[in-house]
Length: 429
Image 1 (cartoon, rainbow, N blue to C red):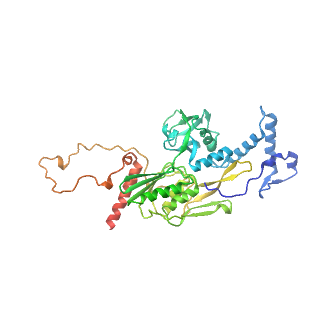
Image 2: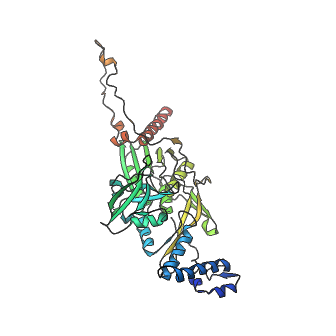
Image 3: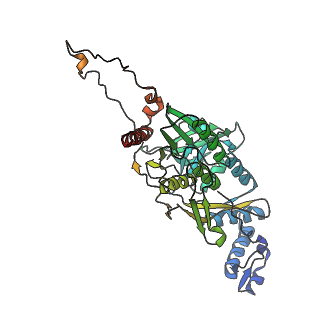
């Protein structure tokens, strides 16, 4: 998400202090700020550091110990804060730019386990039929229990063409299964559009990247060239991403007002983000699809459109991540990804843990059409009267539905909802 400028962290030259020096000070102050470091805790840290250096079975590089200490310290804060070395920081920048080498799989935490939030369409994970909510048990035979989200994500990245072994457990199955994937260059547009019929369209956002707002603006400009009776915004399985992109997306549908605001420990963390766009489809009826994989920036968009009464939210409760992470660069090219603020919807709602509750609840389901061939109708009766009219019995062009609707229950419900809105408007004319 958006980087909020803060003072850099204290240099770890404190480790060079001797135990005796610590004993002469009640606290140790960093050069960067006024936060005091208790000497007793520093003595404990130095004691552990020295014992590892003296007694561990093999020599340990000092940098490895310090890096590990920082990584562990940050990992203790919350599931979304992490220490990023230079390579990990570069990988994060690649991800927000929409191009990286990996398996195309977004991870999250579910019931304390690392699980799959979503897969990139046409990526290695998607082609292998890995599904949201699958638990990631091991990567290359190494258990994910102690990896953390960042560590697991890092192990999924690698050179294009290299292989990685994944062990997963699926809900309803007692036994894990293992598959081997070849990493590939993951580069997809974050915004795709689909015409559902002549006057209805769907826009899907897979992830919020730096240029998602521009992609959506261009897509909506194309759609606005013909009249639309309804628009569906599909945010299902969207793991979030860049905060500014969420603001840009909301601004395409809300002309003014607050999109989201953040509140943190420091005054600089409190910010209001307001809509700045000139929506081309501001009067078009709209439904937003969400599910348990709709997280973070995607929840910001859904919450803002719900609070502004701009769209009907349909689906199931969203993921429930309402925190902002900022990148804090360190002196050696590494960085801290720190949770610095909580975000709130325009009406002041915090959806942390609870998620966005849809206006219309509709779970994902498989729909089987009943065979009505044996149902008797007037046309089956002997000596029936003919229809003297000349009208065509063909389905009107604007009601010819895209085949994808028939296989997606939630999408079908969204289409039916938009049809209902259209019918109500016609009755009011």
